[in-house]
Amino acid sequence: MTRLQTALDAIDNANAKDPNLDDGQPEALLYGQRMSEEANRLFPNASEALKIAARGQHIERWVLKRADFPEGRAGYLSWRRELGQHHANRVSEIMADAQYDEEDIVAAGAMLRKEGIKRNEEVQALEDIICFTFLKWYFAPFAAKHPHEKVVDIVRKTARKMSADARVRVLAEFELPADLAAAFEAPAA
Image (cartoon, rainbow, N blue to C red; front, top):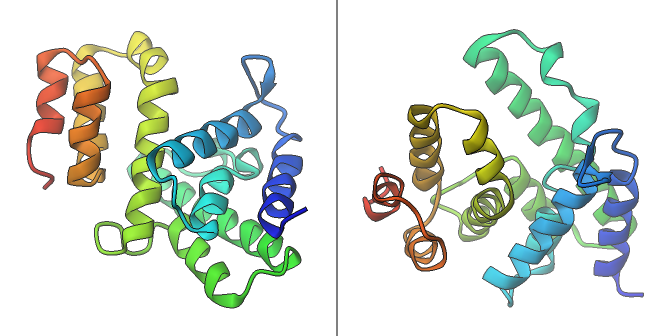
């Protein structure tokens, strides 16, 4: 077995323990597999560090519950920062166990903590993968539960996180109403 497969299997084994289910499967496990599918589709020549970061994006996400953090934006951002650090730490441990060198481990950690988004090509690639995964599998259920104004706001925020190439690709791959498509047509702020 390759070290890449060893790392991906370790992430899957951790995520198989997620008590939350989505489509009858542990939520984090399914999300990781979807992330890998999008990573392979969008970036077929991705580095192993990017492939591992994509699979580990939500590793053990259930251990840090949003309800354990204060209400409001500050509490939300604190929760997200701690989650990113947890994901990076767990993936780093797994990569070290799989015999990855420090450079690859540091690169995957930076991706998972979103360090250098819009400046670091691989950090941006991971963000693009995250956004495509959201749009492909999670957007429709989200949109069905929220008022249109909130949906438009989320789509605008999603588009701002994406690279210019990814925004163009979204317009080519998804049929969006004009007001949602406009978010992807505008240059990123």
